Image (cartoon, rainbow, N blue to C red):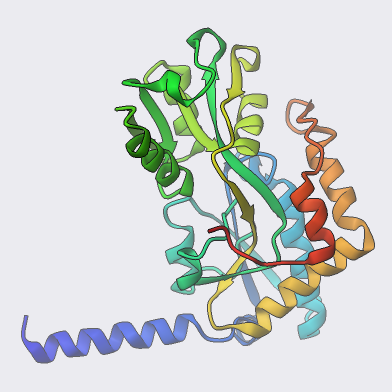
Length: 294
């Protein structure tokens, strides 16, 4: 390719990036539409029941944010479009302007903050293991020379890969395209364990074909915060999203929402995850921090 052609392509790419990072509220106002992502299998944050309806803790947070966008823009009839995303494509599709807001099960960390901005943290979790009860696996050392699954595009895949190297366990890591795929690797005995955020493992186990056959084991390798994602260099929209979360936390609505999805029976099977609010999250109801994981 000629140099001039390369330069033209580079300029076009830069132009697209500039367009994609345009102020979200102006973009939404001009189009009279906001596009919000959801996850298909991140129980109890964002997951499908039936073929197309997403429900969950993060879905309700998104809906509260959308209501505040409507009020801010004075557009009560604002159109809302929903888009499924995966661990692998959620960041690039946000950056390029395909959708406008992601509240799912995304870790707020410094590496991702180079590309996107994060809201006030709304959950804290850590990497653990989902295994069959018959596997004999209780902690990471039991996985030496065995096959372990994680999900493409997640921080957990990086964490377990580094742990494997540091501890010289000689594990074989295979990656599912999404959390359901990674769970299937364990259920079908193609992997002995599935390394993922503990809360997602509890949710996946609760809605699996045979919950009694599975258990979550192992030490929590590191504590990581979840937060909503918005495009980088858009302080106006981040302020609105933070304002919604802050209002819910201060009013007590956030705690009620937490009880609904983490300490009560949830659809579709009526399973109660029975997961009390962590000390880190309780502290953040007052601190209102958006501090990333290390």
